[in-house]
Image 1: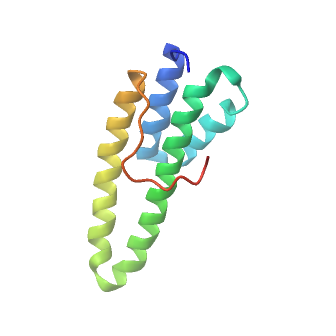
Image 2 (image 1 turned 90 degrees about the horizontal axis):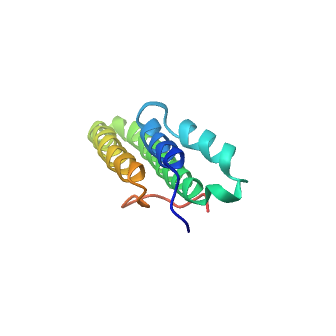
Length: 111
């Protein structure tokens, strides 16, 4: 794969960082806009990675909300929030450098 353009690097960073505020919607929009463009391979891979991670985070939030009935859910939700914040920032910084970033734990639902 060739070197990503600065615009692609910036959009990759936006795909990762948008997950902090708007969940899976940001990465989904970026991926849907660019998925059929042959010259956007790197950006597509980063948008899919961010989308998969945000889907995983959403599932974890749902599980945490269900577990709040036994009180441990509060800790789960808090842990997911902190992990989402830290990992999205790390991914955004790496994407801005043009480095392929893979989250340490994410369900790879979108191939």
